[in-house]
Amino acid sequence: MKVLIATSFVAALALSPLTQQAQAQSVADFYRGKNLIILVGSGAGGGYDTYSRTLARYWPKHIPGNPNIVVQNMPGANGVTMMNHLVNGAPKDGTVVGSPFGANVTEPVIDQGRITKYDSREVNWIGNISPQYNACFVRKDSKVKTLEDAMKIETHISATGANSNSSVMANVYNTLIGTKFKTVMGYSSAEQILAIERKEVDGTCVSYDSLLASQPRLIERDEITWLIVLNTEPVKELPGTPPATKFAKTEQDRQMLELLIARNLLGRPYVMAKGVPGDRVAALRTAFMATMSDPDYLDEAKKIRMAVNPVDHVFMEKMVSGVYKIPQDVVRKTMELTKEN
Image 1 (cartoon, rainbow, N blue to C red):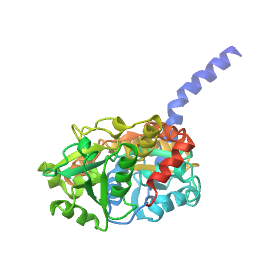
Image 2: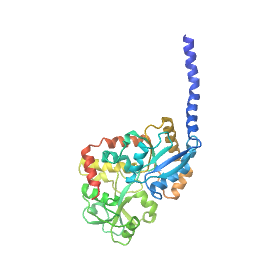
Image 3: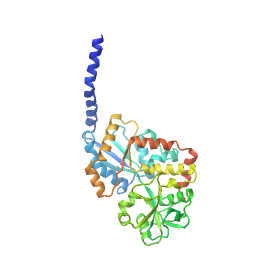
Image 4: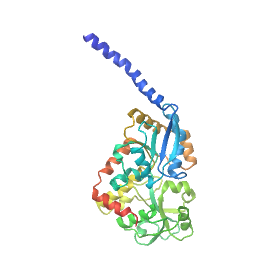
């Protein structure tokens, strides 16, 4: 009996690599010849669309079976429409990946199920291409030179509307740290920058990577001064720019800022629904991170000024878990602060 047990044990060890190979092959067999769909939660031509279409050209070669990737746009409710569909309507076989807004990761905590019909802790995060660093800047010849100046001097900020990022962040900083930003609304996205150049306003608040992609000369020619970045620590792309939490007056203010920061740190995420077979999720996660170091992918990203500073699903899950632990009174105050004025 002992001999039989030992023989069986040795046989199991011998078969183990074959079993692993079969499992890996089953993932390849599944994806071979298939279309893998990336659902983008915004319209065609925007930043999220560009990131996904670039990823779609290089991700397949790292996925077992090398599926074709098709990008489909599903705008609506600032990305929530796509996430609701991904979680509650799309196939759970591993053929659909979502590209939501970074805010969609934290939105269920703030929304409390009114529009969002998913829990960010109960989905399969794949990875995040890059954080988004929201920051406020002024033109070089503005009388405002530092954030401390903006706490003393009325600083005009261009914005598209009351619920735009520029308006929301100006309100956040005015309320939580005492700046004197005054939003001047009604501009288009392009006109926001023109208004600064025409000296109609001092500056604006914007995502750094979006500005780098759309108006690189402002950064490359050192024509602007960054005042503050929505983050917990300094950002290498914005040397000398103080992080927002440095100015938090209370622990609650810091927690409110951290809730807003979380959606920026998870700025370009990819996700699959709960219920997708684990081996397929694992394969896509591995392939995603491999693509992030693919020289051809990085070369194209550099040419189109696309930021690539990836984190894996483990980091994302930790961030999401932390967001869900923020006290509800802090969440409610943050919701009031960021809602349309």
